[in-house]
Image 1 (cartoon, chains in turn red, cyan):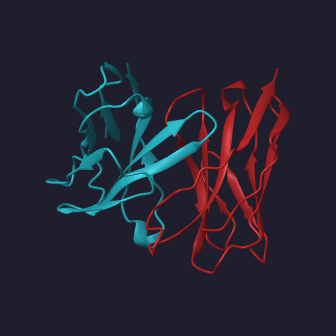
Image 2 (cartoon, chains in turn purple, red):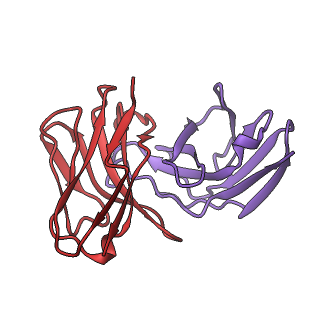
Image 3 (cartoon, helix red, strand yellow):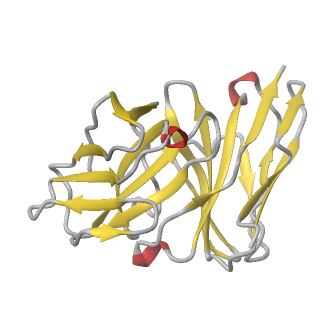
Length: 113
Length: 114
């Protein structure tokens, strides 16, 4: 699976948009980009995923560059409850790494009042 | 739907004891997996299953057994607990890995081996 690079930490004011970047320059054609977050020591929570196109759901938007080498997770109106570690993961559908999600260090997002 | 349910939430064992961590999902997901999370090391895949009757090893399978007799359940067995197995264990499931569907995680089991 492709390696991802994320900033170690980011801050955001409550009510503002949080934009979390991720670099995955070695991504291959069959690999998806997944975003998860982990609050305290709870289980990782799925946020959004995409292959080529930009995606939006009730939690966030995912912007993937045309060359697929980087992406940005957007939380449109951050709240204090969005303070968490955010993981950008690239994983193929099937293959030798069948289903394995490689969690790196992630980005610690702190939302301030 | 309850989602992915893990029991127990906490457990303390003595070295050499055996136990089973339970994982159940009510979403008719075909894929299930077990991860462990240790400080500073992220989550590591222990075992996974692509359907009932089918299991395979992840990256850290030693000391653990799994079985998948039903679609809903995927128990993880520690054969002879060791202090190195002190960790937080997460179970996850997905409708279909082959089509890129995301995995959904349980709340974890916090296991301490003395």
